[in-house]
Amino acid sequence: MEPPKIEPLLKLFVCEFITSGGLCAEALPATLVKEGTLMRDALLADLIELDSYEVVTIHDVRLAASPLVKSSLQVDSNFEDSFRNMLTQVDLVWLIAPESNGTLLKLSEICYEADVIFLGCDFDSTLLGTSKFLAYEALQEAKIFTIPTIAGDEFILDETFSEAQSLQALSNSRWVAKPEDGAGCDGIKVFDDLKKLMVWLKQDNRYLNYIVQPYQQGVAASLSMLCRAGKSWLLSCNEQHISFDFDTFSLNSVAVNGMQAYWQRFEALARKVAKMLPDAAGYIGVDVIVDVESDKIYVVEINPRLTTSYVGLRGAIGHNPAKLILESIKDAKFTMPVLQRNMVEILL
Image 1 (cartoon, rainbow, N blue to C red):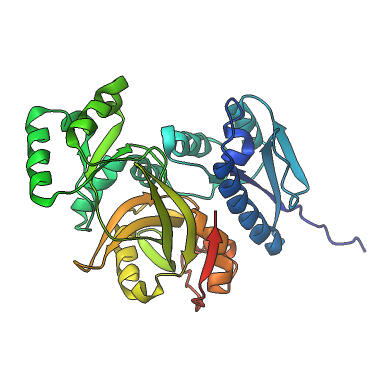
Image 2 (image 1 turned 180 degrees about the vertical axis):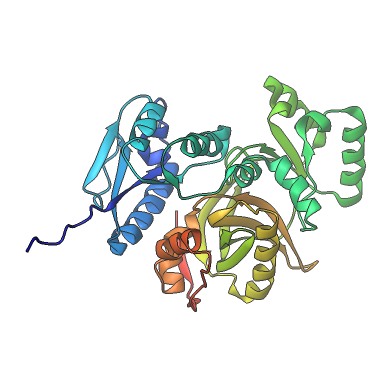
């Protein structure tokens, strides 16, 4: 009698952009390396525990490979070639990349065209995550509270600038310039003086790639959720600890489930976001500001990918989050198990 054949495990490629050599042609910022390594290794640990896949990675030659995987190829030049080559050797790909400079969208499009199962969102959701102005328009159409947003090339027009000056005279508010396709706090500048903002936007034609918003007071927070075909499942309600230094912001830590008092309201918001993203699949992070005075929750941006909160998610919910994400993508009848609501602090 012949022994039963053992089917080989499907090969799953985990690519976290920063640690995988996405910046191989430039300096590696220590803060991005730390954050990227935390996300990559949290995901790898969860996937390896499932024992359902052969998990592989690539890594920047200046960094050590993750100790969690048996196979990781070095990238010392031309990240995109290495990325495309890996896609020809695997069955599935899980991408973690920033929206900045269109990186997430570009790499996702490469995956859509490859002969692999892409464990992420489809084009429309990824585009909304990449473009702050398109996200603003979609949120307005979905009747979800968001911060008024002006495209940079419109802001510099005399009529729009005069309206902004009138608004500032009434509210004495600060103003924020953000990269149109930025990720997190990266590239954000705060201005007390609208004229200085105008000068800054016109330098090097920044207005072509920036949006402008009035500064919104409140508690910086986020929600981690699962999406599939317009349905949502809330995973956690998180508080972001952000510092303000002169005219820039920095994310210092995240308290996963630090905002669980808002669970019901975040759950209702997750349902609205999922309905406006019918092609979203798997994990979505939504950054919000909770204005305690007005009792409103404003959506700041949508991240169609794993976010830093994932690092503390396993301890916060008492389940393997990678398992839940994969099941929500693959199973049309997916139901969320009962989650714990522990608070877990992630220091960055």
